Amino acid sequence: MAATKVLVVDDDLNIQRVLVFTLKQEGFEVHVASDGQAGVEMAAAIQPDLILIDVAMPKLDGYAATQQIRAVEQGRRVPIIMLTSEADVEQRVKGLRAGADDDIVKPFHPLELIARIKALLSRSGGGAQQRKPGTEAPTLGRLCCFYGAKGGVGTTTIAINTAIALASRLKRKTALVDANLQFGDMRVFLDMGLDAPSIVNAISEADLDSDLLKKLMTTHHAGIELLLAPPNPETADIVAERQRSDPGSLSRILSLARKAYDYTMIDMAKTIDDFNLQLFDEADVIFVVMTADLSCLKNVRLVLETMDSLGYERDKIQLVLNRSNAYTGINVDNAESALGRRIDYQVINEYRGAISALNSGEPFMSSRPDGPLGQSVSKFAREIDAVLAGEAVAAR
Ligand SMILES: Nc1ncnc2c1ncn2[C@@H]1O[C@H](COP(=O)(O)OP(=O)(O)O)[C@@H](O)[C@H]1O
Ligand SMILES: [Mg+2]
Image (cartoon, rainbow, N blue to C red; front, side):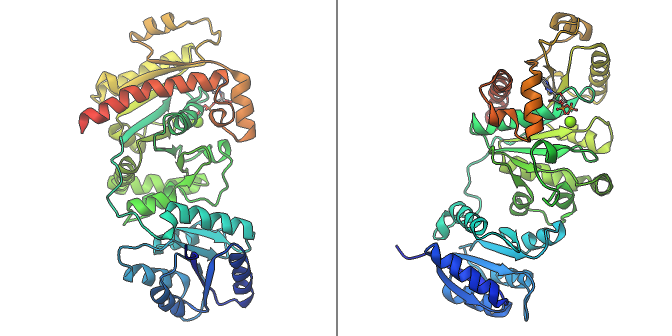
């Protein structure tokens, strides 16, 4: 088998030397270009299996060179990793938009670079054969909202762990969207840094397509892909503003997510504003998460009335009782008769399991899937999958 060809495009001699050494040690065939223009020419001439390209270079910078490489490409799409000098989200997104598949911030550890190269090569079929666009299997394309009857009932916990159960146990392609625009805490729950792209980048992109959306999502090692919340409350306003002036911008994200994933799970904030109303409208199902206490029951009643007045069918709203076996003085029967409707699903209470997962940044569904809480959420995931997958197939 011929060695995998890597083209290094960088004007810095030291970086060239390090890269050539590291890549050759791994058995790659290495070619070097010292500026963007030469990089574009060599890419066409030698047809590399992968390209590493610097951002700041003479003649043609990395963005422009990547665009030119993409523009003349026919059928075969070469994986490109951009070497950036700053962990700045804007810069990263600019590179991804220009057509890069991944990026790595200098200085980087050679082992990390090699890991990224291998991951990208395996995703793209070793660089030799490439997937043709539009040949992927259709997804279930279900959109599920998780809405808490009040703060602290476990909405985020259930959204995250259900998403992981769907992905890891049921092998569904699953995305998780943190739509808590102002105070999304998925970065904390899942131990992600502040420099990963977010929903701000996705909603601001006039030409968002499935490739770019995929790149704006952060892969979590438990097998789900995340569209993170804005890194701070100020940037959250940009999202709300953009949605208000063009609701199509949010629709575009959601419909691309439906095409790419079996399940898009949305963890919502508690407010009822334009943004959330659009999410409710577009969802296939709204899981209202609650606990069995009086203030929750009161809020659930209000939510149900609101949904009624919006004209939603009853089935679109599903009640999920969290911490179902915690002693509150109100049992499931009491709660059901107070609400005049059934509780559809239950997740058990296990304080220790939930809190230790929270403090370790590792969701219980990936660290202890067979613990009591893991089993309870797995059961919930199986039950909703049976209904939603059935609906999706019937709708085809
Ligand atoms: N089933 C459960 N058993 C025990 N504790 C839970 C359970 N679900 C959530 N918790 C805990 O409740 C707290 C609030 O959860 P969180 O998911 O942040 O709620 P919300 O998103 O509704 O504000 C967290 O400390 C979490 O660990
Ligand atoms: Mg939350």
